[in-house]
Image (cartoon, rainbow, N blue to C red; front, side, top):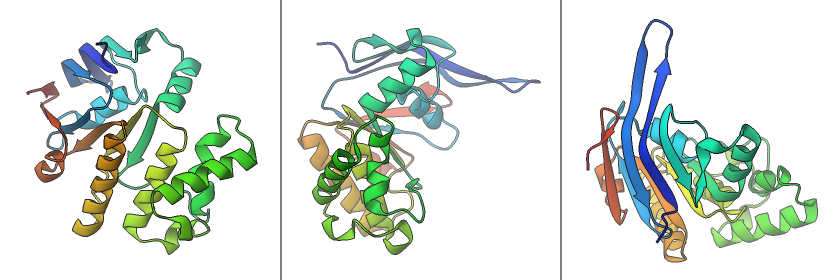
Length: 223
């Protein structure tokens, strides 16, 4: 079976002018569609670099990344943006919601870039928020929502384009334990429904939620 994600000896080196820093080295990783994989490592282990490559936000210096059968390194910037928009939903630690903008419009925003009509954008955003238990919070701005509710809005925004994969970067990092458990349960629900989840974390308890763990240390996949 062809993997949804297939990294072959992928590395990323940053040129800082006076020195080169290898943030990721010879990474081999396969993730099948429908998996829930936790990528865990301490600060400086290469998690952010790996996340940026998996999410098509950055390109590897060397190696090959194949996403759903498409060699990512062969794509130009426009094609890469299209793949990112269609295939991947992002959830970040800091929510990244637009202030002074309703939950509904925050969730609908990715569809605007896809050229979806306003009526259809709102219809799909309403459905996504309802799915996340936020039907009564659609008109609220981020400042009027709790941290857990803001993260649910962020997950709804990630889902609205119906991506194949959710890439969640420390999604519980700014939440209390109860809200964090709620967000993890949402991710489990999405995974049970067939969505591929890739969770980036430094927390071993959070990583234990994945059905498989990938350990990073000093820019290398350790296990």
